[in-house]
Length: 219
Image (tube, rainbow, N blue to C red; front, side):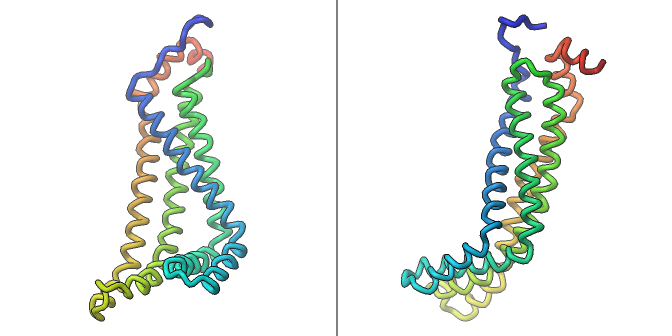
């Protein structure tokens, strides 16, 4: 057992690296989910602000952004309650993952096995919730796609009617596919890390690190 005055031994490098990835990914995902949850509670105000921009601004770039925002808000409104629940749960799961990953990196005398269990459970839950979040956002992206295509079709490169028609047909699918790709990347990383922290090799390394604390927890 480590004496109170001695430094806490470090976990193997591979486990610390995985914990650091969890820490960063949970922080970014959780903050993004919390921010959007707060925005969903003010969709009416956001819609009014966007409408005022579209009505009074003469800047073409501002008008394009306003029209895209209007399409986004219109797509979010029917699912706002369900999406708020998903994003709220995702932010909580990421908070647990962030704390647990931080404790694995700097345990401060706490049993690491307990933090490993919290981390593996919370990031697997985050993977599930991020998948649902991504499916909802794919619907929004598909709604935004036609609006983006309408504005892009005014560019010189798409003045050809055939090119403009292809753009309008393809862009919603491309936007949705990009969203699903990002979902697969983030949720997949969460899921892989969750399985990693459930693996026997990590469990054994952490049990060895805990020493007598691990034995006390088993009792």
